[in-house]
Image (tube, rainbow, N blue to C red; front, side, top):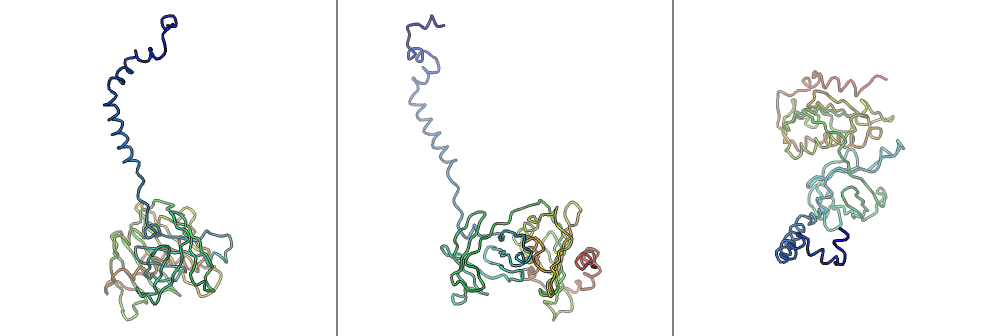
Length: 303
């Protein structure tokens, strides 16, 4: 081969190859195809539109956990829905909010320009939310940094039973997979029976996603804060595989922050369920329910 190619340039050899001859004879067509290919690649590689602050902020956020049990009681956590905000404490209500430029605006109970708090957004991305208050009140830190809560399990709840008592409205509640809510509580003291309602599909999906943020493998049956006048909450999650997860807490702090947020969500769920009086739902009915009985036994252990 070396002898046969002696005295011939590599350029000559290149042009004699069939593929290279084809390229040289069809330069215009190939150039056109390359332009089309570049255009198509550009379309596929276009960056997805960036989310707005109003879209990014939706979800559950919490400060990083600490080993200090006392400080755990005061960790900031927040929930942002489509238009309602709740936080920074376990007993916080749901109130309207809005995003304007780089400011988070919290309204006390209605969209009222004269009654609102303005909080500066220092940083907001998929995982981090940093806020600074505008007025720097004494009971607010200068800045708060929270991190988005992510999924930790893949359970599929088919029924959720919940109760709370003490500082929150004392209540019994059961939610099925269709979003129907059975409720009995002292929030409706004027009623001598319970109530039934239904939450929206988006509210139901949001709640199920919150159950999937629990670290199921490490959940304890009972969390206890050694102080008085605290709220007791308990939840039983019956899953599609037939298993039921039980956990409860007295006070805030020892329980994981994602459990605190779930308790809070369930504690005020009746506000969005459009409840109607239902004589078939009674206190005795909840008390005699086997799931609720076991949940109460776990929530009030004998020390």
